[in-house]
Length: 342
Image (cartoon, rainbow, N blue to C red; front, side, top):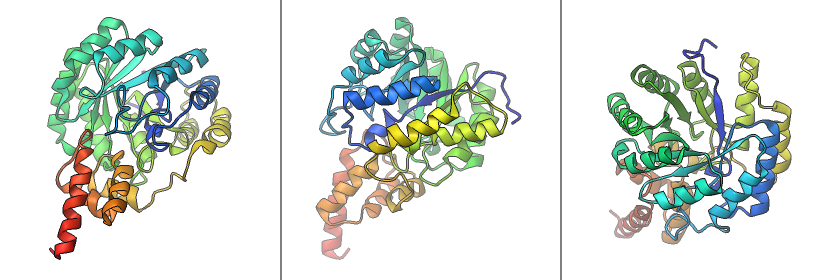
């Protein structure tokens, strides 16, 4: 691969954060310890641990965690000999106080996530993270919803606040390879910091998109063992590592150990296969936030509406992360219209 950077690619494993959506945020401390221990032993660079919606996400709106996330972060830190523990923070859900608590427990990397057009709300949290001495990354979610020029301007804001990298985050799994190429290339040309990429597999192009991102110079890459993440999951970590090794890129992560932990440790935690089913396919097709799927399916059952119709309507309304309360409203409106024959 003719990469446009000489920097080493670093992988952040997100199965204990993005994967939290799949298990309805019911991870136990022992499960987190087992997964973290196996990932650390395999040589994983970063392991993200928090509620699926980031620090402070354990609420009625986003879903209550079985175990307080701070206990899970502390447990994960205790299991690591070389990997670093990361957390996600979405301003408006998580606070600086929770960030400080996570840092005190040993989290050393934070990804401050905003909607792709709302980077300005990240300033306080990025400043605070840098003051704490944490590795600090900007995370521009729903990256398909903004033109490239606006994506660049928002990334520059995060850079100006002190972010050491900015991610193109395909939260809906809606981007196609050439769209990823265009966005990563634009950021690489416009920023003096690292560029990252986070994919979802709703259109079955997560690995392809990730390879394009690396080719264009992204050095921060997310993956999830067994695709364990919202919607149809993320770039499958063990598959990505195998592909990169075949391409001559060796990241210091043991492929056999990743295969084994995928089968023996993470596999048994998955309640259902992470294949692309009609719900997750519609997420990518409609460009809807991947964590909306379970909420839409529950609302569909409650109101007797096809969850796909709910997701398509949310896409038309350009719903973004944090607007989960809109799902019930849309379902109720569609059910009423159905009854009236509208």
